[in-house]
Length: 226
Image (tube, rainbow, N blue to C red; front, side, top):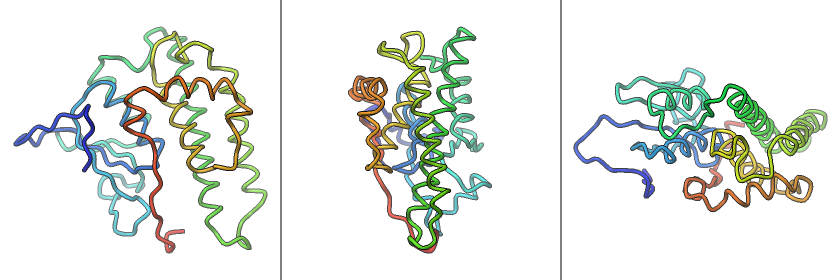
């Protein structure tokens, strides 16, 4: 278990949020950033969801992370749903804009960024297969999703410090998480030179402590899970 400087270790108190996370996951990272930004005490349990003995189904029937375990031992899964639950129960500081139009834009940016990450995951695992078993059309389809998503984000984010309403929100968290995951999983894709607005935006955000604390790192994957 790794505790950051934002986390508070409460000895003798069992009722604390627990987050099941994986070090490379952009979806788990979004939740971690939200918890850190809101300064919510939580216990971080880092697991490798691709290991056969991970036993994630005990907490999420879909076998996916992240999973948030509440103080009452209820389990919440899917990063967007988890973040909405956190926002409802720990509203300050808000990570969703209050203005309906701004909230819609922030959520739309989150959907696009998440879609880029989903395509990256599919591409990553396809690349782990033997060359003779890889599907070129399938890989091209994922690369097109990534490229289209980045083009859309390049147009939607502003030149301001933040994506929406010049205030830190789920939109900023989603874009940085997607960009850093892209750098981790698709090193040959020169996105920074092609999408300069995103590149400058991510560079501005990189000094934020919650992003520093949650920078993604790879995990080993068992061959028999591919």
